[in-house]
Image (tube, rainbow, N blue to C red; front, top):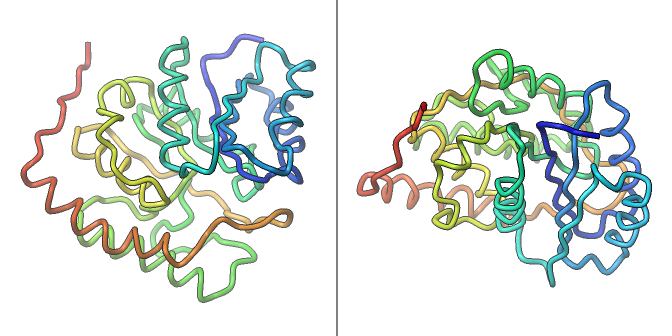
Length: 249
């Protein structure tokens, strides 16, 4: 099964979800490949993926890392892997069904047909909140964290912490991935900010985010602290930093 797209899914202890999410992506009417980046899950997530590779030998890929090294480094690992291949569109998606696999089609459409360089599956557009099964406190924290990041950075992005995205290959080729500093969820902010500073076109595609039903959330208060306090330093550093220019050739 050939495809111009790969969906990167970082995992740590996702045995309850991983087989189902893989099957749902492969059941879509458009062909997507999948790269699982597993951080040494002790629950056997990688073993499940290896068994499924026998069924999907050309489309399902696995990169195993030793230990829990952080969401940001997992995606950077996946980006570098994908850039060595022939993929034109590179996606980020969670394993826990908080992101609906069917929305991959809409993100792909935004980049492949509608001219976006980065398409974001957005929970917050025009003051609408499309989040299901989150406690109200967590919704407010996430919403106002995005508003805060938007204020500090000047980005015209409503969901600055979103983790459901599609990049054109050129974006990841332009960004110096080794210079991305955040390792936790603030990584999502830094990647959007860097994409924006490089002059790429960013669009938001409205989605409904549904809190996981199976497995354990990896979110913590420290993650939000990184996003809140780290973004100030990121913004200040950007005043002295020279960002690469877009190569449209």
